[in-house]
Image (cartoon, rainbow, N blue to C red):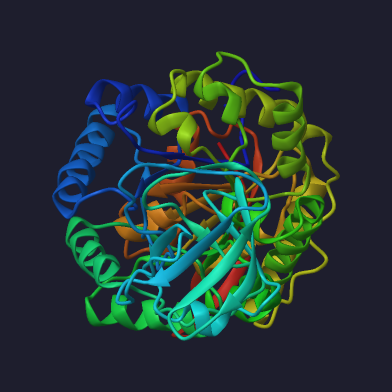
Length: 476
């Protein structure tokens, strides 16, 4: 590696903010360490916290002279059990009733727990398997009526209050956004979030519902659809087309499908995203042991390495950085694995992607040229982010993609796609001056050494018409 240029990491890093990391001091260290996007998990968060913490992230970013994007992950519609007076100890073969919140409790000696989903007894069939508390408790439906279902306990354990319920293979009738989601989103839009992660996406219409809500509230935040149940897997192609990005949320997804199928579904989702040119984030349990341990397990190292080899755009930390004891160490582990694995990945361009516009096809030519030049880069100017997202989707290994924009919101959204390093810079009225300014920025910040040949994608004025051009420039 030329000492005059920086190491170029192409896989992005997303962390989740929590008690372990939300202080200004820890935020500054994480941003300096190379975190690209900070996720706000709204499952247990308040609107007041959103306003406060987004402001804090922006202030620390300014002080650190390195910007990060903010992603709000809305809770989404969840099916949960109600409160119990004391935890229920369940043994294999025991009976348990789940009933609607409005139903009367039967005094027939069978313990009963309420559920916040009124249509539960209508949606499940006799013989259906029900999973509770992240799949730790398994039940089989024996009988049902209009308001309750009676189940047999298949795995022993303790059932506490408000435990999450999974219904593998069941198409539930739940809204895409809850009242809490909408209230949280309004707070997030006011605070200036860059991405919204939509939970439990089952169909493309869910994405369109969120898109309409964001439009009505004046937000251009990009939508990251979380695939975490069987319906989302079945409808992945339509969901990917409707979304701006995808998150492979392996927590609930690993409960919803057979565990041995999870790696296959992950690969299928990554390839489907690459075919549509949409970024994909691999999330959940990547470094789970590091919540309590300063080093990862060998299996976790292999898992992260696999995500890099599959050419995912980003890898994400959840509990590791919300309540974990070693959040900074987790980021360093990500960086070390990425730096070791990326150079070993094949340098072929993404052949799956469907390039539907002439300008997008020109970008493929730019990627080929930059790769053949060797020790090169692509410089692109964008006000919508489209060109940079396509270039990232093409996966030109070994070729940095330097994306210049004069729109601050677009600048932060360019922190997600693979291989894209964004720069916020004022554009000159003279396109030539804008190019010269960008090359000077790259040289001054040591992203490109003098003498480097770069491929420049920009507009030019010819006979009073604006045309798209691909140019070859040398950094002087």
